[in-house]
Length: 351
Ligand code: PMP
Image 1 (cartoon, rainbow, N blue to C red):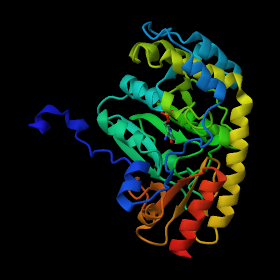
Image 2: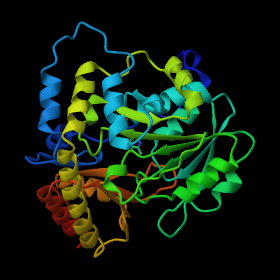
Image 3: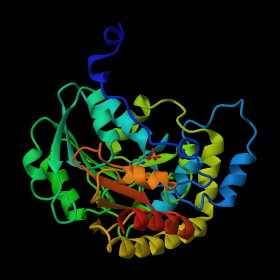
């Protein structure tokens, strides 16, 4: 019955979300549990963003469908052209609209692995064909082999920089050469760019750059993403998008967050310092990949590390079901005391 109802391409494995803090407390009878699994900003958003969100009360009125004020602020922050900026419910929303607009059955989507799982899910849902490219053995770079994966059927090439879950960045040269090599579109996901030493600045007619307020700005719950599109795509994107992807309280919060940019920079500084500290500590136990994001990625020497850490009150991301991973773990950088709790638990299990 259910199989008859569900589209052929939508009959995909169900997403298994990680365990919540409450669930882990209950299951292991723990008083204190921390979650370092979703790459959130542990300091939260600017208090001014929270205040802007709270003080909006015209909830019976639809948002401004053009999101003018927010797009103007994003243009100021990024230096991008206002007319080419679109917003959506997170980078997830940007991706959903793009897939809806661009991907037909059998179209090829080039995906270097391991990477953010939602790219795989969207490709399958749209009956696209995944062309998986293995990253390099030295630091998970996207190497030259990606050019062999490009064909006349390539619709999208997805480059995530810094990459989730590996944390490394790619080069502008790679993105430029990919854009020149494909008749499709290069999608550059810079969800974690604020934590990196560099962003990728390539302006070509077939490159899209997407970013978010979910990570460095600490507004994951409000679902605010944005992208720089080539000019020819802007109106098509708006037509294919859900009409009001962001609520006005969320828009106001994002604007306030951009007006208090020092808060975000302050969080990033603390998180980067902790990232380097945890990186050095982790190196004593495991081979850990240098990271330009707010998380670290390593291969566990034992089978069930994520569960062992959970028993000790630390939830990390078990990446064993990511395409191209096996016993890999991704841990988000939290506050210093949370990171210490993670390190103590790790030492107890592996030490
Ligand atoms: N891209 C990457 C690489 C991510 O890791 C995530 C979130 N985990 C997203 C996009 C989605 O972000 P958003 O909250 O903006 O939808």
